[in-house]
Length: 117
Image 1 (tube, rainbow, N blue to C red):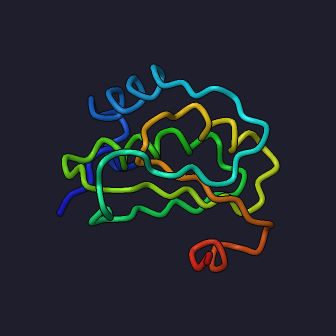
Image 2 (cartoon, one colour):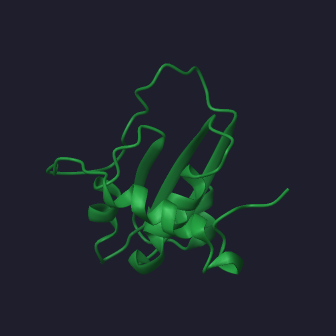
């Protein structure tokens, strides 16, 4: 299985397509962002893509775009923010794709982020 848009294919046309699609997305600002529920007609996604992050806004758009750009569409992308102090929440707010969920927790490290309850 290959994953398009990975770091190994940094100069590929897929990367430009992912980033271009993200540039057109917008979400109205909210007072607080914790969890965004999926709102499209789907019982449960077959695949969950977990993206733990801590102060990595430079890579977040590309990571989300890569996950959303896969040919397999029955997914959810869960961004677990491990207490970032940068613009991580703002970056995620800009994405309107209903398959994207955002969870925030106080900083406890990547292991805790991946085992969030």
